[in-house]
Length: 141
Image (cartoon, rainbow, N blue to C red; front, side, top):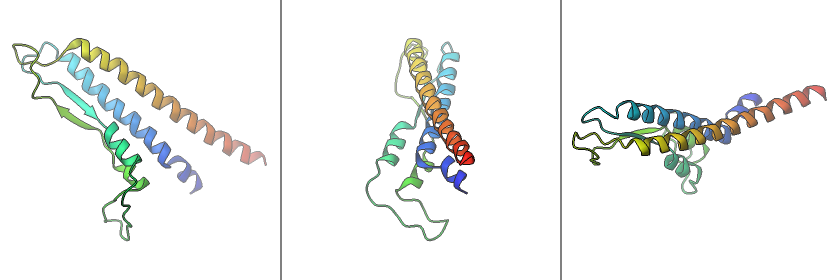
């Protein structure tokens, strides 16, 4: 019970969502790069940071749930509702064949996304190491 609370707190969930979001973005970028020469291919992008920021900074109304089927309104539970969203860019025209992949931009996005994924993963690893250390120390007392 206590271990479940330690492993499922808001901070841990934010880090897990960060890892999931950057993994989904990595798949979208890899698919964009693979289709750089495909005529009419439309670029995909993944968004989750704004949803996460809104859920974290939600300081407005927090709904009280009296039944599990009720919608979650605000509070730490709203963080668990964040899901990476895939958007397809139908508006940008980059080439005559209607493919809108800019390989230089994709490579830059890939590098930035990789760095974010590494940061989320390192923070989650440190968090789990801290929990493990606390449990180990408690066993000696």
